[in-house]
Length: 124
Image (cartoon, rainbow, N blue to C red; front, side, top):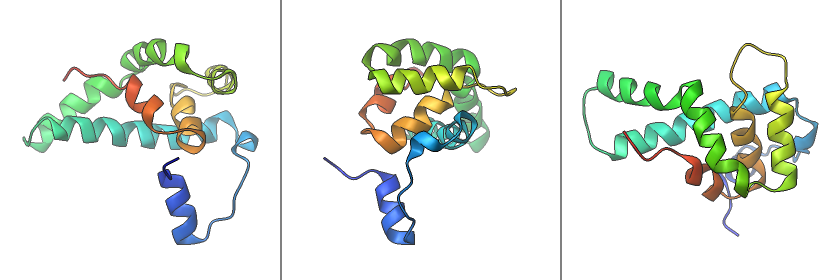
């Protein structure tokens, strides 16, 4: 199995292992938001170089809550029971921000990037 970025960072910065199941849904959402944003920005930039304002506009259309909800419809059928439970736990967390990122936070620690990338929108 290929090492994920979390393994690389832990090794480089000597970060001890922690059971991510102890993280709150909002902590997972926090890291998941950054991961999702990075994946989408990478996909948008890969479609071609353009003005930063245009890149931001394209990215904003994809990372909005409605698009994340559509992405979760694609992702849910391929989640394990544990991953689906984490998503549901995050969806029910008390916050004013979208909870879809919880799944990305959990997936980034626990699985390959394939699931996150499978769910990424392909339209610009």
